Image (tube, rainbow, N blue to C red; front, side):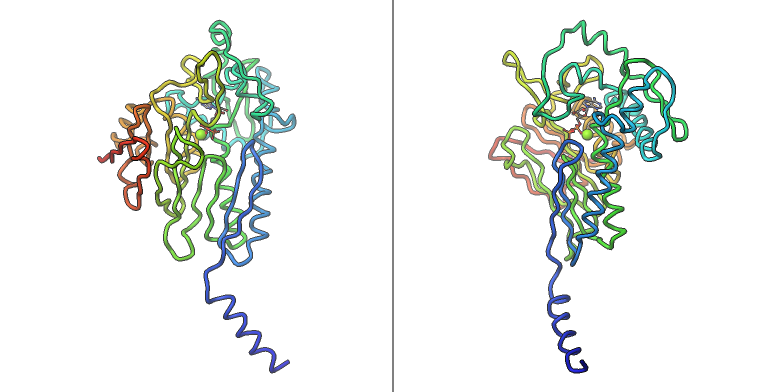
Length: 350
Ligand code: ADP
Ligand code: MG
């Protein structure tokens, strides 16, 4: 035994410390989208399992389609008083309400009846969704059910009007990133890249200490066409919303899944996509949707004002004319890739 020990130690040193850990990828399907967590750790198996379990738990709370979820119970009780919800659900509803108010209701967590009318809602999955263009009269009848935000008190929530329904599709995936980070960290992982649908979160840096690099998609290209490649600093989340993600065509028109709560129609703000980089992943998710509805002019004005949530974020706004606005905080390490495809770039400063 005495002689074997130093030999084992040598082997451990060679294999263990000489090189950085290889990334280990775990992909899974949750919240109606493909998710992946890539951990840079010698043995992240348990951490990855815990991360996936964390997302599954939230999916079970926040799904609209599972009858026993908090959101389904809240929706079923619309107009008839409060229901008990998990503290995590109460916290997310409060965050959603705050984003709704600050965005002037461009982000509306109770837009579900309108989304259902377009076939973007209840069935969620693209394979089973039945898309249709609703009559204006139908939308007009549904709009009064929107805007009236859920009332959260302690660990209860209530919708005041019968027929109202919450849909957290524009914030839940981002919110889940916080829980994934917690699960990974608890299991000793301090370097990972977390992709939950259109939201990418950097836990720490790459093992060599350099920031993770992420691609932003060309909203007019195929899945492999990119607008830019940028550094995502430790602890930040990059969230992209675009009309190209879910849409259908009817009578030669494209109808996409980001709805302007003002009229119940797919937003036509002149933007093709909005990318938000922020510390809080739920806010990155909610505001990428909100700013897509609000448009470039309003997004830039809010950012330039230096006040409010948007001013504390970095943005990439892609207009229908192919102009790409990028806020100064993203300039370092940025590689623009879309010039060949006709995009022009401008750094926004304040
Ligand atoms: P994705 O879910 O495709 O990554 P988003 O984060 O932009 O994209 O969220 C879009 C989803 O949010 C829609 O599928 C719908 O469920 C919901 N939604 C659409 N428009 C709004 C809106 N104005 N406010 C809040 N939620 C919205
Ligand atoms: Mg969103």
